[in-house]
Amino acid sequence: GSLIAVVPLIIAFMFLQKYWQSGLAAGSVKQ
Image (cartoon, rainbow, N blue to C red; front, top):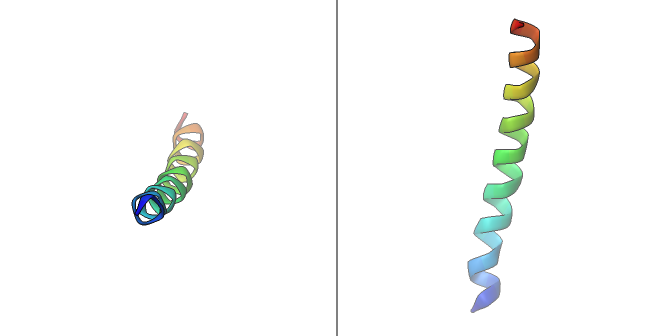
């Protein structure tokens, strides 16, 4: 039960981390 709840969180965390890194890089280039 807990595994089913944790898997989507891990996927969302990995996706947000990738999105945050790309956004941070784009922001630094803008400045």
